[in-house]
Length: 117
Figure (cartoon, rainbow, N blue to C red):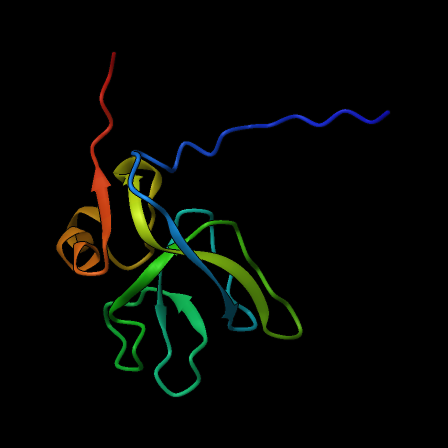
């Protein structure tokens, strides 16, 4: 019988109910677990948050629940729309999670500081 190993992602940070959806990721994107994503207004597809854009992706939509890198065609990935997350595990290529904290809070996404025991 094959064995499986569970490795926690250390992304989740609290007991708030999580809300997720399966979303379309634009072909050619390389997105990491915990990356803040935006939604292209014209297509409804997700890309990395880009604070310099004007296509809809300048506004946070959610946080990726799994890494995604579709190649040759659009792909799908699970995205968190609500929950509590460790700020140190959330990423963005064009901003910092701290800078997006208030924007994410409007979505029901709360970034928590890590607490050392």
